[in-house]
Length: 151
Image (cartoon, rainbow, N blue to C red; front, side, top):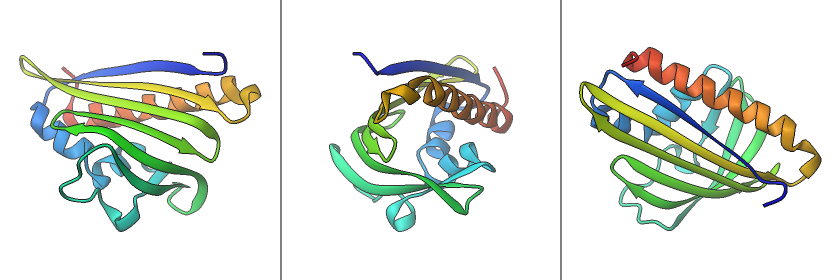
C-alpha cells in the first residue's frame, strides 16, 4: 500500500515468557519501556479486566517526558491472549496504526517480537515517522533487554 510502512523488532531475553508477558501487557510495563522519554496514559489507568477483543480501549494520551501531550492513540485491541496482542488504532498523526506483539518461550528464556505498520495522515511525513518509530521501538527493546537481560 502506498504511504504505508512497516518494520519488525525482536529481542531474545533470559527470562520466563510468562513473566515478560505480564510486565509487557501492563500499563506499568508499557511505561517502563517508553520511559523516561514518553509515557502512555490509558483511560482508567490500566487495561480493563475481562477484556474480550475486538475491544476499543479508547483514547490513550502519549506524553513527552510524562507531561507534554504529543499524540493520542485511539486504541483498539483485535487480539489479546497470553503472549500475544494485536492492536489496530488511529492516532492524531496516523491514519492507520498496527502493532502486533508476540512473546514466545525459548530454551532458557523467551523472544519478544514487535511488528509495526503505519500510514501517516500526511504521507510526506512517512520517512520522518518511520525514523521516529524505529527509534522508539529500539528504545523499548533496549529497556526490555536491560530489565530481563539478553539471551
